[in-house]
Image (cartoon, rainbow, N blue to C red; front, side, top):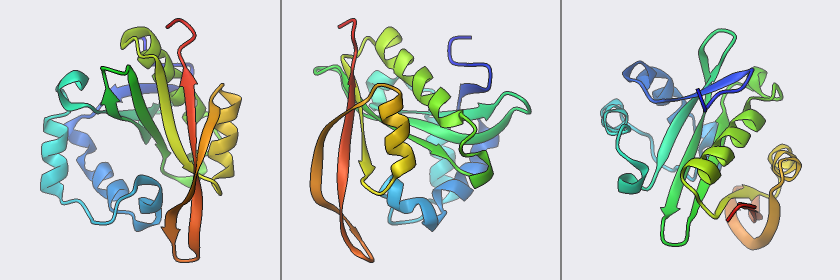
Length: 176
């Protein structure tokens, strides 16, 4: 299988993922990273899962579950979105939900797999993401996996403590 490493497997959404997605999507503690401001209903998430089989060229997005291969448990998601076939680029986001699953290599493995998928299967020219300037762990992961800082959006994110900058990271396909 193409979308797996020694420690993780990326797989499509399944109906059985409804409860865990409901928990993750409605956790207000992570809304700041997903730009979410309203909760999701089970009905909306069920429809999302039912339509997740559609082609990325049709929907402009793709969500895959990140499974720990040791026990097949879902530890997070990787999302591709803002797909622009004309300019051959796509945005991504990675979530490792539980704190005890972080710093285990799951996010780095998922990022490497999804980058390979974007460059070698979708034949995209670039992949990018936006990261809050205070998210030091994500910044380190991105720079360690070959992403470059393309710019800083000044005072981009409004928080309870004021405005924060957001950093734009991108990686160009060396084969394109």
